[in-house]
Image 1: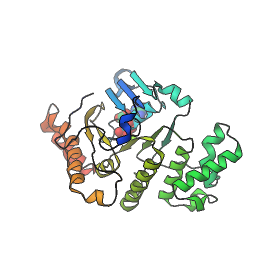
Image 2: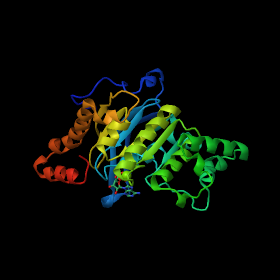
Image 3: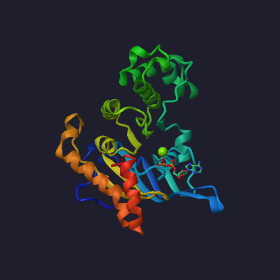
Image 4: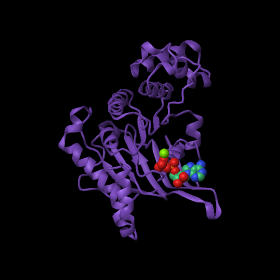
Length: 299
Ligand code: ADP
Ligand code: MG
């Protein structure tokens, strides 16, 4: 893995103390690449990805739009196969982990079933795996308590706000007690205030469930606030250009966002995102890209 450590970087693992005791990585990607299509119209979405994620880490993937963040998340979740290289989850090929329902996934849109009540939406993964009704109900309520939506169990999705619906999607992903939670810009459609609140809630859920999270975002503050490590990706073909350890103390709170270290880390991630433009061949032309990235709100 190309691991360019920024000056603000600290030794690994400082953000998630329990991770060090777990020897086997939850996610192990080596030499992975993804090409969509073939011939002259082929799209090289990812190239030479090496990444190892330990238990209880919270890893964010950040990079410009179209750099392959979602593609990488989909490779981990075996929603699409890698064109080259290997992707292992819990020590097994990603396919086997998917068959064993070892991960939960949350997308940008909550994709709830409108005709099912909230609790029955959360129960769905257990229904698919044939769990008994009583167990399903109990577990769904437990998850709704976790995301603080217990009193909405009998409501329908349209009766809930966007942020609440996304919490339902998180509850549904967690109902199978996955070792790995994959999240693709889950708060991208929410306003800034709701997003910050959701970030705090996700942190509290993460602390209580001890699950390992891989989180796609293009928000630098979000990545820094949430993560124990931030993986910075370059534009297509997507590659890992830097990995920044986030050594902010846990639990992360309102004060975290106002600490000096937080600002240093935000700056470190921002610089890592821009570095690729400065390093790239023909950097002069790509200064336009840097301006575009700023304009699109990555920095
Ligand atoms: P990101 O999530 O970082 O915005 P994606 O992973 O969605 O980026 O996409 C990476 C690149 O791969 C983009 O250029 C996108 O157009 C392309 N791509 C993604 N999925 C497909 C697909 N199913 N077929 C063809 N090209 C795709
Ligand atoms: Mg995406």
